Length: 172
Image 1 (tube, helix red, strand yellow):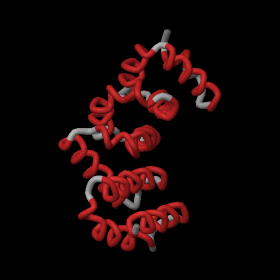
Image 2: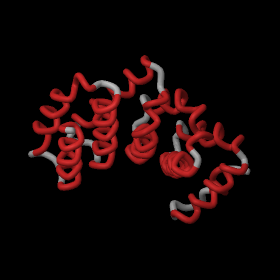
Image 3: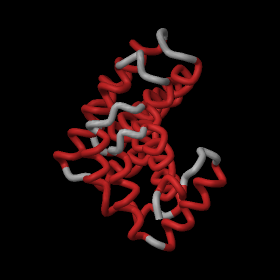
């Protein structure tokens, strides 16, 4: 079956049906991952959303593909697809090896710093940075606070709310 047939639209219930199918037929995951790199931006975004929702429901079936997803994320241009993969890596970063974690951290840092990126991409990037600073790199907490304070004034209301939350998290 073709993904275009499985994901004819971007409705949430369509995505949920495909997520349930993926959970039953885990062999569909490589097909979804391959589609992330497709030239069809619309289908790539729908596919990334299905992967995101699958990760939320059953992270252990997406876990074996995290290295591959990271490699793809580092090359993506589409904001919607980037947003979905960053969502996954908010918690999945813990499973990455040191090198992969370094690539993700640098990527998240650059996405957060880029004020031209859509707020959701910057928010998920910030969540990765905050979680990493809190749990894996406590020695950079002060630098993270300074970075967030610097970007506070230029942020959208959503960015500002996440920065306030992040500052509280880093102050614990």
